[in-house]
Structures are given as structure tokens and as C-alpha cells.
Length: 556
Image (cartoon, rainbow, N blue to C red):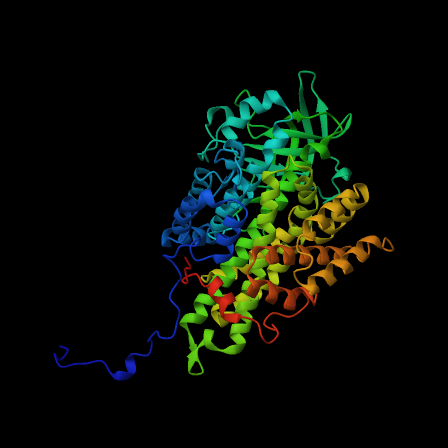
């Protein structure tokens, strides 16, 4: 039958008209649109990096970069334990997007710049750039952080450092599966956690047996070893002289595969682009770093740096979440007007941005301390601040991600909207490298072992005393808490809560934006941060807060 030339589809055949939906946020400059970050970079001495950060903010807003983050999470790592004819290969295959993100990160020096080009503000600039980068995708940041943090530990063995350090600091990425001595660029992983111990690494049972030629053979099992395709791993094992730290290469110096066998990859709720594995050491070669029995001391600096990067990553996650929430609500209408014009939504959005303000301020202040660790005050401040900040910022992030996700309604929980991934990723930093209890107890351990650290913490905040009576009152309360040793451990979280909130308040007072500091004091300090999101009191300058978080509202 021939169809008539006059045939037209019925009006009822067209039902799918897309309107009142928010187009994807892309093509924006992540740095230019982040007033909290820009203010902190300049306030703490990173102004010299402004041009580079503006450039990189534009790079991280490109559609193709954002898409790489999605692809790296959609196509998860795959373990190939053996090749097709039965040889053990322990190969983890990643999607090309993962490798592209790694290449981008290493080419920008996110793993190396403060070591290879030290200067005032080097850690400020590196933290700001990493904060932008991790908003693309969080999982691949794990090997970036571990590589960055490994340098102090590896330098404890000058011979190993001479060969490995130049390649670790190289601004390139070589993801090929071949021996370390054939590669121009190396990445470093870490294996500390065992089944029976977790954070209690002194309970580790992996053993290290001297071979007589200066190397050791490692025998045992690790319950978590992240990024198993790194070129070398810092590993804790029991040597004859006690718990010790080793560098274990994936390939042996003779070009053969080291006896490090991947048992399986973990199936995680978040951080899915990054492979986390269980491994067996079956006589794996390792090089001793420092001395036998000094394993904790050898790796403690690496731990502190990884804690700091958890702060950076969680702050970046918070920023991406509030950015999506503000953008979405500025585009979508409900009940006759834009969502962002609804008073209650404004309360929620301003509250989400206020969390970012405090997180960025605390993170950047610790970056400044890292730049000046040769000064006693900065060293002591970082000793507490890396644990306090890691505990507080990472602990606050899951609920923050949830509230931002809710701003998008049903779309917020759909996997091709980034808020769903942000929510899944949010708990990882809080758990990885010591959960909340571990961080809180570490703060108390530092206070009881070196009481002077408290004086440095309080001295840092003393410059804000007299600016606001509410802050003065909070400092008096904190001093009483710190002086009361009764059930000190039982009260650890409450004490660290106060330490974090008062420090954030001090930093925001010093930054000089009264709208931000007043809102923070009224909603966090006076309630110890316990309010529910979107319950800011009357009189808060909502417009200023929302504009500071709006990715498309670029202030000069």
C-alpha cells in the first residue's frame, strides 16, 4: 500500500518534550567561580599561582574532562590474575579514561610540585590545583596522593631514593606493565592493613626475613592494598627487630615478576574507579626503609600527608556538590518561580556553601603549615590539624553530599548525574587511613604525649580573641574541655568537634568576610555544628553565601 503524501502524524504521537530540565554544567571555570578557594589562595600566599590556577580551572570544566570522570567510574577495573596460557600476571586493567586522568594529574605535578619546586606557597598552590582536579573524579586520586606522600619515607634509604625519587617526581605517566627500571615515571602505593589488625598495625603478622644481601623476603597477607598497579608499595612487616617499613617493587631487579599476588579486587560502594585489592606476599622482595623496628616512624610522615589530602579531596567533593545544587536550582522552576528563589531552598544552599567555606579555610591553613614545617609553631599546628581536619571535614561530607543530592530531586540519585557518585564517594575519605575514632584518639594521643601542641593550637586562635564575644566564649569552653582529663578518651569526639569548629571560626574571622564568619558562628559555633542542613537562623546574608558558591557568578 502506498502512503498518502498528505499523511501527518497525530498530535498524540508526540509526548516527549523536554522542558524545565537542567542542562549539564560544563564549560565553566572551576577556579574562577569558586570565591572561597580564590580568597584562601591569596590570603595564605599562593597569589603567584593565580594564572596557573585560572588556566587549570578552565581545563577541569571542559566537557571532555568531565566525561572522563564518568567513564572511569562506569567501566570499573578488571583483574586478570593469569594470562591465557596460565602464567601468573596479576594485571589490573583500567578504562582509558582512568589513564587519561592519571596522565593529567601527573603532568600538572599534583604528585610532586612541592618536592620538585619548593617555594613559599608551594603546598597552597598544589592543594588548590588538586582540589580542582579531584572534582573531576575522586578514585584515581588515591595513587596520586600515595605517590606524593611517599617521598619522605623513601628518602630514609638514600640508595633507593637515588634511583626511585627522580622517577617518582617525574611529570609524566607511564601506566605500562613493565619493570620500574625501564620506566621514566613511577607511582607508589601502600599496604598496611591486615585482616586481624586494621588500624592497629602493630598487630600485623606479615613477616620480613633478611636474605643476607641487604634485601628481605616478605611473607603474609594484606587485607587492603590500594592501586595494585603502582610500581612500588610501602609495606609494614615484622622484621627480626620489630615492625619495619619496606619498599616492595612490583617487578624484581632481574626483570622477573615479584612474588606479590593479587587475590581479588574489593567491590566497593564508592571509589570504584580505583582498584583496591587483597594481596599475598609469597617471598616478595623488599628494601628496608630506615631501620628495623622503626616502621611506624618511617611511615608516619606519609600518613600525615595522606590525611591532608583527604581534607583536600573531601573539600573538593563538597565544592562540586554545592556547585551542582546551586546551578540546578538556578535553572529549574517549581511552583511558579526558580527553585533558587524559594526562601527555604536559599537556606539550604547557603548552608551547603557555608560548609565549604569552613572546609577550604581549614584545609588551606594546614597547607600553609606544610609550607613552613621548619617552624615549630607550624609543625605543631599541623600535628593536630591533619588529624582534626581529616576527622571533621571528611566526617561532614557524606551528609553534605546527601543534602546537595536532594536539591536535584529524583535526578540526584541517578548515576549519570554526578551527585550520585559524590554521595557514594563521600564516606571513603572518612574511613580510609583511619576512621573517625582513630583520628580523634590520635589527637588525644598527641595532646598527652606532647602537651605543648595544645598551646600552639590555642595560640593560633588567640589572634581572633576580642573580635567576637561568641568566639571568645567558645575558646573558654574549649580550654575547659582540654584541661579536664576525666574520661578523656570517652569524650574524644566532642573535644575534636570543638577544636575543629573553633579553628574554622578563627580562620573565617581572620579572612575578614563578616557575612561568612557571622553565619558560621551563628549556625556552627553556637550549636557546635549540630544543626540540620537548611536551618540557618534569620538574618543570615544568604545572597552573599549563594553568590560565593555560584559557579557562574565570577567576582573580580
